[in-house]
Image (tube, rainbow, N blue to C red; front, side):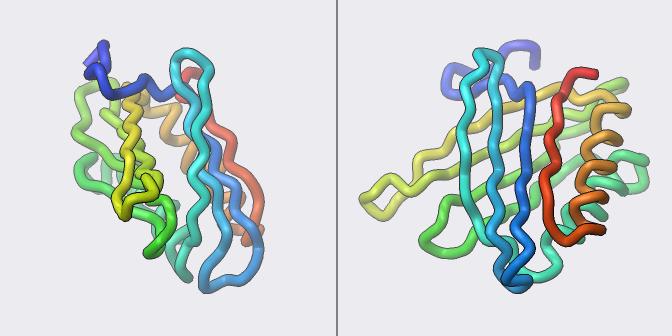
Length: 147
């Protein structure tokens, strides 16, 4: 997994910015940064409880209390979609992927996926940053894969 597929990128950073209101559909911007420094932003609305669930699920994965498999989708109809997921854990790294599906204008979506090998300590940093946003009810988790 050192090299991405031709239609994929290598994820180097992820930013999650959460607005405080409305609580049942919080404006949130996910921004991925790839190995070339190019960024892509997907604005979505988080339903009530989704931020807390994201933090809880990532926390369980980071502590190896849950397997690193599956995906967490975000976005409502007629919005971009964001999927954060894991393919596996191959010591010492989690195999993380992030897919943004942006509306194509013809009723479909154009997906862009970035993948990263994420060490335990790096995932713990993301969980900590999301915990701060969760506790404040708003804010930004600005995370880099590398230490």
